[in-house]
View: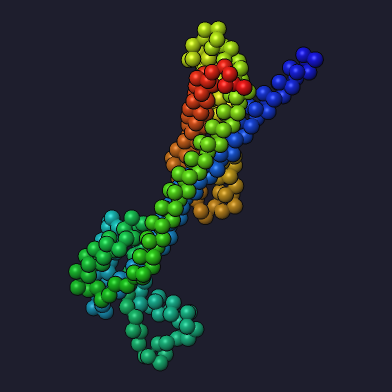
Length: 291
């Protein structure tokens, strides 16, 4: 009879450990996915911003030396990500390919102008920053016009701010839920040992002495759940990098390492705090309240 009860207790203990590890793993995995999404959403937003081109058109009086000097100036400009020089002949060919006929046959001349397509760095794709860059460039007397999609710039920045705000709200909500789920699993685990805790307290053991083995056990379970979550996250990263190499998921290794380290630290910290307060609750209960 005693042997059957011991086996039952052992199975219940293993089941309790498994539920703690599983809850820690699932919660930290979801938080890790959210963290990686936040990192890569910033990268994707920056990539999209840098695809918006500012086209600078030059007057026909601008000779090759002026155009080359402007190109050299752009190479050292802090706001330029990369630039593309488009001659009037190249522009005419592009227009011909788009409309399907050679417009110069009936115009008799090429009305297009030499130009530079400037792709700005993401930090400069802001309404005020682009306006300052445009004003500075227009000081060049050889520049005929500067064209870019102002509405698209404003739309992109407004939407990025909205998305970032919602991501922060969702992150905070999921973090709160994560703490509650892990805390509930650990409290259930401690609850099954409440009589042991009270017995140790009645024979004179200090609260710190009673808490220590429970805290250490929970921290080890938290570390195990965090390690499983990290392995799963690395698997997801490897899969995405293999299937979608153009996204450059693994390019931002320092931030990825920071997220993985944060997942591990969260597993340790949450389990430590939850177990500390759970054991403290049972230590403060009266014997009659244990039932």
